[in-house]
Image 1: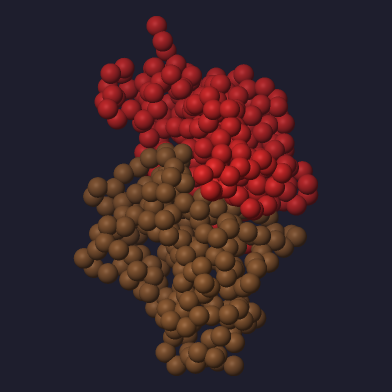
Image 2: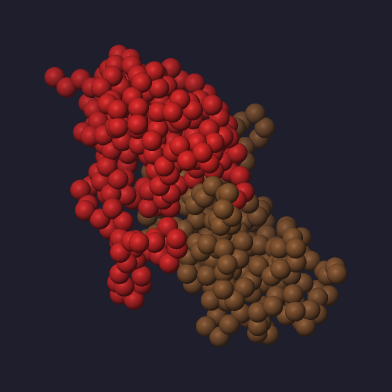
Length: 214
Length: 233
């Protein structure tokens, strides 16, 4: 059955609205990169990328690409005034030392306890690759996940216990999906927003695990 | 007189023995010392252990070293990429050993080797399969995993400018692993696009102090190409 959904840009906009002026932010590969397009004007935000840059700007104009200036997804970027470069150990010290305010990550699954699975499907023929996912997830003051609410086959990606290999334990503070925005609290999953036209009972049915009303 | 300038990449790598552990800088294509990797391929050393963030892009550089069967083991964080076909084939055939390390642990383990740290506790990876079998500890209420340094016989890194003392500067995100790998290897070979007179590098902007570098070799600048894009799991 079909139900109303937020678009990917609407999801990105929800995340962007929650990023405060002055924040140091790392956007993960994939869906989270859209957040950069929706940051409210008037907020000055320092974008960090784990390959050694803070103060990252938007993609360069066609023909202006310089592949010595790339983001973690290996895409060419630009440097804003005030931006700077540093080596990999310093870059990860910024994460692991708790100097990042927010990181936004994609996910395969998030558990009710805030466990994250986003690096490996665990499929026997898959070549594992972790990159900076585990460091990012544990390091930022707030770890936000941005993902579709359901898998392609309709299963909830918000689960009681992750069945995919874990990236970190208890690190996720908020989940932004195409159906709802949900805080992970000590009391459980608290829905703070949901897409217009989706009944509460339907959201609860699709999610499977218990949800708390706003 | 101290003079770390070496005339050719072949001379810079002539003494790499079989079985050596070799760090190779670079993230994506930025900072990949392709001329040095090519020289290592030509030199013929076998049974190498390679430390790099990735596991080769396309058919050149590290990928060519893999394709030639010179690498016994790779220590990296992100082997699977859109253009990592040589690694993928060797891995699936069981012909290469992989030690998969979260990227921050990789950088810090390399740094620790250079800094004389015996081992360190890190929160990264706690409770995951990448921490299986490793010692853990509760420190002030948070759980940590014990990680050990990664030492190397050689580090091959790409810098921008260098002088005969081995002082280096880098170019933008091509810096990445260069400074920490330079610290961690017994012999660090840096390729630079420009060799300058001693004193020409502003001492306030030297990134890698020369004492971490043993050999400096000039290579012509080549435009860094796109590459190393990730693929979904």
